[in-house]
Picture 1 (cartoon, helix red, strand yellow):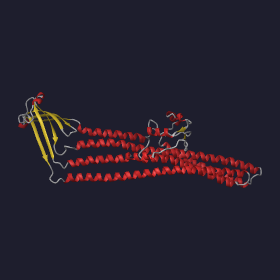
Picture 2 (cartoon, one colour; picture 1 turned 60 degrees about the horizontal axis):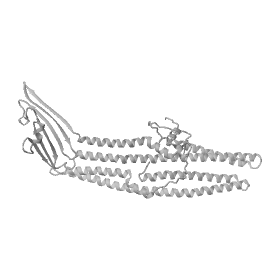
Picture 3 (cartoon, one colour; picture 1 turned 45 degrees about the vertical axis):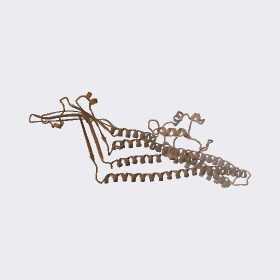
Length: 462
């Protein structure tokens, strides 16, 4: 893995402006970096390109078509025929197909209907569906579906980014929690070392019994063990965080060991507008994706409904030897070619079955969409409740930590005047450190719950 000094990264984002040490990776800068360079963020942008290319592909169905035919037969030294034709066909969004052609045919045995003037024959006209395909045909339906897919890629991109936001946020605050706990355990080790040295000196001077040195030593060893666990946890959480750190060239980077996170406790309160989140959930990416799928299914239903209508196709072409004669040609007067095609199935089983199937798919998807909305709203309410509960827990536990620290200070004073024991002091201190670890966990949980609540409403990096 390519290892870079993260201090340079932090300077890029102007961390000094926050009034923090340059070795602190601030959460907001971290999120901005993840959003800019993480591979999933790049994949999210690729989704938009895919949507654009899907529309371009569908628009290709309306591209003008040039064609040419050459058919010649010579046998037994006889020129049977030489038929040449070139033309252009232009589909339109209205369902009308414009066409023009040039025809030049010669030959001893040429079919009379293919006879044209020596200089060739020009034709220009159109064909239109008067029945099936008048309102919607495969070409127009394909383009409409592509446009719906293009719109859906915006929601798919948002969904991917929201998931990245939640995962990256969890990784950061779990790292911050592990860092805070490591610092707390290191503090406990230092206190235990100081106490052990003091007890040992007092024992040597005859003020404390030997058993107190054993008590202090076991407490030191226990805290050193807890510190080792905390360091291992910090290492694992740091590796998790590294999964979200990439440079602008697409290479993974590792966090420098000297970089530290923001503190779990912040003077700036986290605020959630619950009513706003309940409104925003209506535009949740998953609901939007379901709506786009319903819109695509509706296009399919309309196309199937068109197939119940009989096929009635009208073709008309003006015929002339010169281009400047087209404006003089009368409609159905002279020099024209036209045709009418009509056909229809007798029982329509295929068409009716296809339409009913399309309607059933819409009903099925609509039910799924309604259920999904209910589930999302329920999840949002659960996350809002968790957010309120964790804030209440922090308020309660902060008072508990303060009370336990007061009890510890009182026990220390009693110990100093000989009215308490080292065992009781250690017990009080263990309770304080345990409660501070729990408070750290609650503070980290509040940060992550904040992100989970926003994610439940369909909001991410914004």
